[in-house]
Image 1 (cartoon, one colour):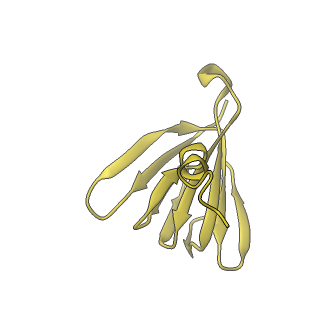
Image 2: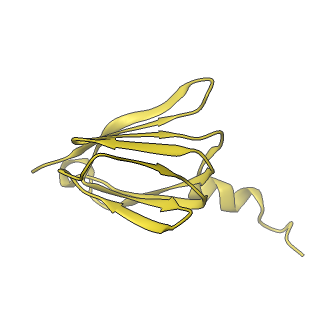
Length: 101
């Protein structure tokens, strides 16, 4: 099965690197699905949730990551996501539980 090698990088350190089946980026122009063999592209990210579809051998399913701005570079079967803020979606939501008015 074809796969994407994805890296999530903040200016101070790398947070994640590994293979995924596909990725949905949140951009200023809308959502962008990225699959193996995607054309080379650099996109500006908006604020929202990046969705990663895991490979079957990694248990399948989806992993959601909150981003706040930044850029993504897509080249061959590699995606580098550079953003100033990342947060796992479940942890991000639980941090605000009971605090919303």
